[in-house]
Amino acid sequence: MCSVEFHVNLHASIEIQSVKHGKKQIANIIIMNRILEFLPLITTVLAGIFTWEIYQDFKANKTMYLLWWTIGIFNFGLGTLSESINIIFGWSEGNLKFWYITGALLGGFSLAQGTVYFLFSKRFGNWSTCLWLIFIGVAGVCIILTPISLPEDFSGKLTGDVFKWQWVRYFTPFINIYAFIFSFGSALYAANMYFKQITKEARFIGSIYISFGTLLPSIGGFYTKIGYVNILFISGLIGLGFIYRGYRIIKSN
Image (cartoon, rainbow, N blue to C red; front, side, top):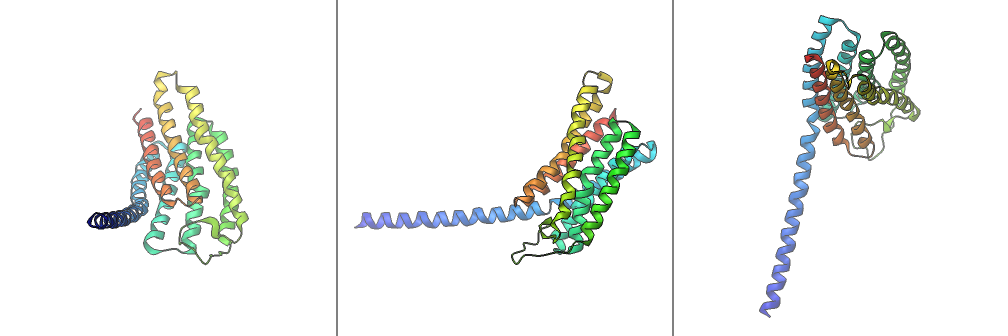
């Protein structure tokens, strides 16, 4: 009898400990998610400092690639600023559209355009800039004008799923493909041009860092679409770190 009672009590104790352990794990996950949600604040501050540094270099050198990298990091910071606003003050239509324009339309493009001017001819850079700014301008107007349709179970996250005109989201793949080609492609181009040139090794290494840093937020954006929003916050911060590292390598040489 005592043996049966002992086993029953032991089983009950194990179940209680398992429940407590499970609750603790859930609490830790919630706390971690809350911490991760505030990463955009850190990224915004760092992007502001980085933008100021590049802008000072642009004022001294007046080169187009520095101008576009300044614009790119500034847009990067605006995108994370809108994420911070959403976390602190809650969701709003204006902030959603601001986030979409600065992030999806301008973020990757402006950084890639800086790389275009850095590695290719100024003529090609000017033509591509004119064409894409017209395209992005049209896309931006459509984003501003689209009505919003919120589902009943809306989570308050920043997402283009709530655009009533879903066709406006078809602009972004073209911009992202262009940004990918001239981010990842520039890494291959730099490898081909500078790898065996000792005097230009910094350009090769720096371009690799910048290209990878530019791609990371896009990877985070993919996970956002399938529900893992916090990965975007992490990839944004790490991506900014890679971009800054690459820029410092190029600048130091």
